[in-house]
Length: 92
Length: 176
Image 1 (cartoon, each protein chain N blue to C red):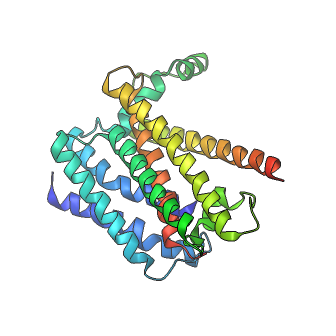
Image 2 (cartoon, rainbow over the protein chains, first blue to last red):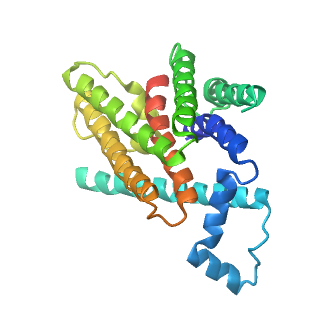
């Protein structure tokens, strides 16, 4: 797993640098974080907690998008693990 | 783009993809690397950097969603070739497959280790196929402006592609 994380992050550096140079502050990480905050269920939860989402810093948006992607990736791997477990039951 | 920033990006990529895995091996975070694995990693990193730069120049901007889909297709093709080679071989050509954490817990389908390796490669191929279908569907939705949250989905697409490609490269660079 360590290798896959290093590989994915390493290869993404150049595309991110290209995107940062083209879009500056409004880069993919910020836009992705903004998308996340505008996602209806997330919006509803934040509204119920009285959290304002209008003026969020670029760093916070970038971190939230990376965390969300890590969570989605983790859940994806768990689904694959579940598939492997089920396969093991049938093979045994 | 500023050439020095680009060079810094390239250096960080080379460090993370080629050098850092050796550090991870020393820390016991991953299985030992095969002989000359650094060369495989260097060529892979170089190829993907060139692909990124050419993609940026050709499309006018870097398309993250397309990058993810392209990497899935590349992994699918590479795995098809690997499976074809393994099916006709009499020895285990990919002992490094045991080091892919998720696949290492796959049960033995046969008493023959070579047949088992083919089955494990086939399983990885199925994952690559599912990844290709998922990233392809997302890429099509983004291209036709049908996707909500297209920037988040673009980033997710590129990471799905890189994780799949990373799994395949891990198979090539680690000892069994």
